[in-house]
Image (cartoon, rainbow, N blue to C red; front, side, top):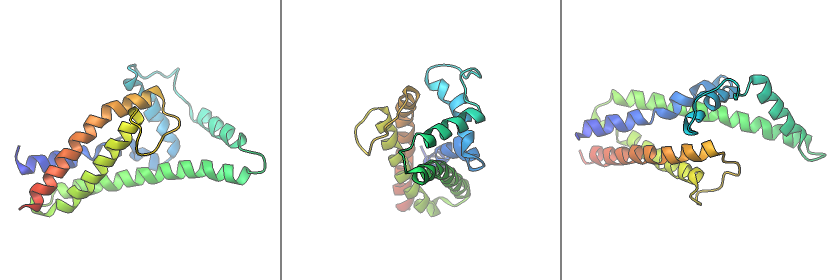
Length: 178
């Protein structure tokens, strides 16, 4: 593999989060599309309209969570629901920013990509660790509500992010050595 190939594939793999989550910047409620069309594939299964959440069902679930908050803590409960959706939108914005950086970097000469590869290597290693955690490894925090599809996503994406990390680490050291 040439250094250009390693660099290019490392950058392209880091587009994946934006390809899935960019739409959530418009509305965090659009994550139901991932639940409907993507997660069933990790079942294994096929997407189904009958088992998918509607927008009104999502709102009802959020309202039920808000209403289930402790007595006397209505404002904190409302703010917690807001924060979950707000951070989902911010995550989407970060994924879009990463994608723009990756696409821009594809046009740079190889010797000018090292900082981007360092950032993507760190991101890929951290994504690998979080996915490993969802798959069942007990480190890097704890997600208290991992579904079976979530575990399967973790199992699939550990090797994906391992490859992305390896390519970006290799590209960083290859580019830095130029």
